[in-house]
Image (tube, rainbow over all chains, first blue to last red; front, side, top):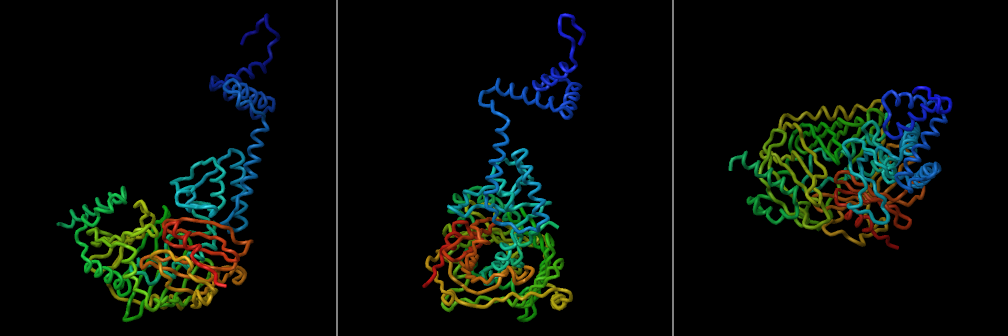
Length: 205
Length: 339
């Protein structure tokens, strides 16, 4: 930009804010984007301005989007409270793993409101009525982001880690006893005492 | 009909079954055409006999809800002696060795050997044999032949007569009767769970020493012997207040769960276990004292296996079986406490 005697002395920051504004509008050049991102990460006032531009854009689009910064924080706090209130039923993992899981799950959910879910076992609360139609999540070929508190509960209950399923050991003991008692059926698959449900590892090693 | 066309026909039939199970149910009989009662009964007998009297060795691949696992299965029979060895190939290493009713389950990583004298559950006097019971609960059809693991196999379909159980589709080796594949189908004909030999050799020489020697190699293993004793519901103060149609009580035992826990005594639980069977599948109902600390109601579904854990007064009930969720729920309230 050239000096213009009709305007006040040139402030290099004006260029920066203009670039930031054009980026908020999705019109910044690649160079300008680079500069903006560097500025955004280094200067707190740039971050504040960025939020203001976003807010202005939001308000222009819809009045409902004119919410204060505390809104997001309140939403996340409420989500955390709800998550903490959900019963953790099937959970027997080693403390190290448990803390790793929590360390992973909580910030993920808090920061983005999403959690990767690949629940192989469909978990349902037994009360009031759990029918086949109410199954929450079926197995998915790959972890998919699902933004819901229900899905987060499923993660806590049954979590595949490194492609393996963490499951309550207590349930496995019932499984094993159940399989063993199956002798005497009219027809039986050879080797049927061992089934896929029994071979899933319980803990990450 | 030449075998190829026949298997194609069966395949098409199976596909249409999967697509529209209830609609196809009526035409199933007409399509099969070769299901004389004598044929059906002879197949049942052959399958039962094959599982217990043959030598076979193969790799069994099972798939429940997309979780695939495989195990190596070896079975020998010498006179009345039966030997079995199952090496679980996926997940945590485990080996199951069996000589008649004596079973060793070895966990090499944990160095734990669980030794159990399996309690066979003798049928109650007056109870019809399993195949007769299954005829009441299922309609059996022969669906033609298909090839499984390199063997020509007869496809048998057990279609439930009511909604309390799942259908089962079985593939039995044409020449020996050995089951090569078993599918459990959901109420809409969808595949819930499948177990199949990917390769199997039938016949061959029995080599029971490989099983017996492995059973003697227990050096360095912590040996756990879970306690299990026969009992009756009556003796335990329970009765079947609300029987589930088609299922009969076939046995009851008092047994220990959690013998693998360390330290062994802390978490082990004495439970009463009642087993109900419809001749083809079975449901286990476990009863133990309720503990508010450990017991939280839950229902799970994995492949065909459904489980309901729920509280009933001072008791904690676990009902589990390869039956629909609604059926295990019925079982979770089937037992009544007698005062």
